[in-house]
Image (cartoon, protein in one colour):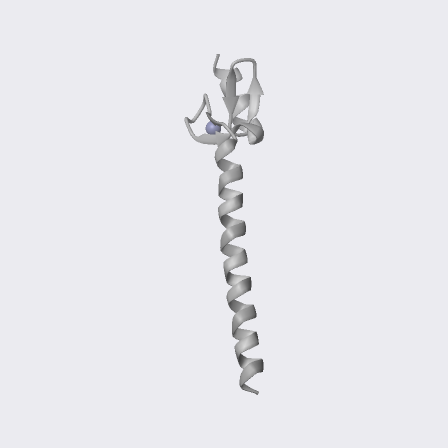
Length: 71
Ligand SMILES: [Zn+2]
């Protein structure tokens, strides 16, 4: 019975460690994505999630529209 408990604890630790490593991997992937600044509100967003207009980036379609209305 004691072995079973040890195995389940080991398995649990393995899952926790695997999760931590996966999170680190995800962070590393995120770090390689270039961060850009929204030209309307100044918020930083990953380039692949931004709305792009020539040399400008926007955090959302709404800010893209608003910025183009003002100018
Ligand atoms: Zn914005």
